[in-house]
Amino acid sequence: MRAPRRRSPSGARAGFTLIEMLIVVTLIAAISALLMGTIGGGMDGLRLRSAAKELVAELRHARAQAMAKGEVQRFVIDPAKRHWTGAEGRSGELHKKLSVVFIGARELQPRRGEGAIVFFEDGASSGGRIQLRQGNAAWNIDVAWLTGEVGLHRAQVDGARVARADDAEGAAR
Image 1 (cartoon, rainbow, N blue to C red):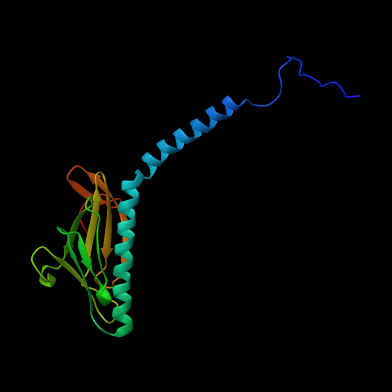
Image 2: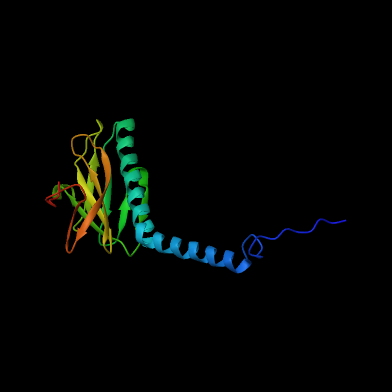
């Protein structure tokens, strides 16, 4: 003989209905989509950061090659065409939605409108900054002239002025 089922005092079953579960899943998906858009900047933010990391890796590679081979290495970038050329003939294109600004030694320009950073055998460099920008987001890639160290820093966009996030005065270093 079967034991009778016990019911809760209110007579309702314990658990969730399928509709309640679907509502919860829908809410979680909507909140996740909103957070991804505001925190990470969505696909545009991902594209910008990915491009910045790619350039950092290429600059570090050029520095490492200069020290390993004992030969000067050049990294050349054309901000208007969004094209770069690095050590060992490596080259690439940046996405058309990105704007590029180069700040560096004018004497090293291979051609008008292009910028170059030179890495020397001892690891030092000519120094410079490459800024990638898309909408209200920007990243600065700074190359120290004395050590050749390559750093990546989020920049703050304030109207037409872009400054490093930790630079209170907004001046380029």
